[in-house]
Length: 251
Image 1 (tube, rainbow, N blue to C red):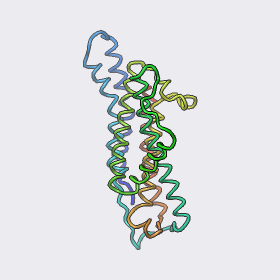
Image 2 (cartoon, rainbow, N blue to C red; image 1 turned 90 degrees about the vertical axis):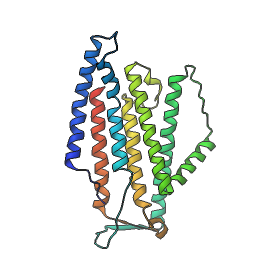
Image 3 (cartoon, one colour; image 1 turned 180 degrees about the horizontal axis):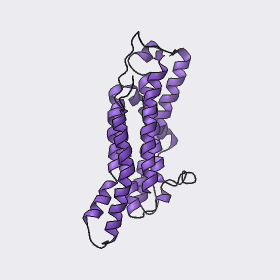
């Protein structure tokens, strides 16, 4: 299975990533000339912050969610993963992906609390047992195809909400430094953290979709063709590299 990530599509995304920051900065400069009034340039600048997040959502939903794998006798499978090795790999991917999704969603809650509550008192306080229960529920949801796709859509909505909060905070000079204290020693651009989250989720989601496809787990046998595995991963890497390139230019 090779994702149809054409050169034309990639070129369009590249041009958008390169040109959009130039337009955004120009709109901002024009708005600053008349900062006391609401102008078209201010509206365009505010609205432009949603273009890339929406692009990420549409691309992730259309290209990195509904995977269709076709196994035929003509496929040149490099190896077959089965037995204890398959069990170990499946558990590692499933548990890691569940922890990642849970952490990402709670990050959204944390951001809302930091923006809305000034006394830093958390409205949602969960013990380790409850967090592990949520992770376990997420594991179960990932096992079934319909709930896995539903969960992916929730993650993309979560991504849009976090992106919107970051953009709003950037425009209004909100103290983003308080939102992710653990990561700021290494990453000063909050958008990088958001993109790394969604990139890692999309990557692990692909691996889990590949392993759990069809009767692979019930047969305890996953046929692997190296090219079929590498091409989709390269598509994910290239796409999110372009998104990170955009955020490095706009901030």
